[in-house]
Length: 116
Image 1 (tube, rainbow, N blue to C red):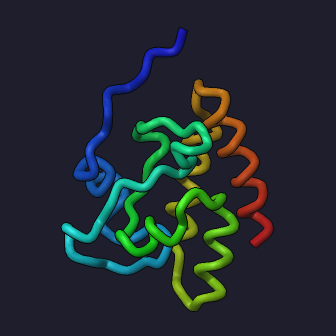
Image 2: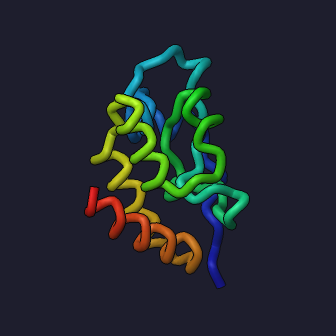
Image 3: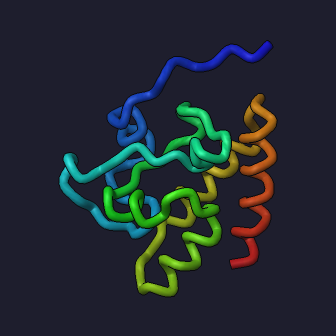
């Protein structure tokens, strides 16, 4: 049986990863930052510290439920500067998750991210 970690706050994720958007690299006002699920909830992602990065509201809205690598490619094509090391770290955390869906998604996206 898997014990779920207590819900994590945006402040805890900012303390861990910094206050720049993972997807575009922008440093925005605190009120414009959001808790972003790496594996979207609509795809089975749970709200946990292993499945979270900081994103600006704009990127969070634009990404929707697109896969990580697809959105990184789109942001690069748009001239943004995604924080690839931070995103890689988030995918590594997911790939080591006790939750199968998180683990499989993290490993798959990490493999694709290495090709960019």
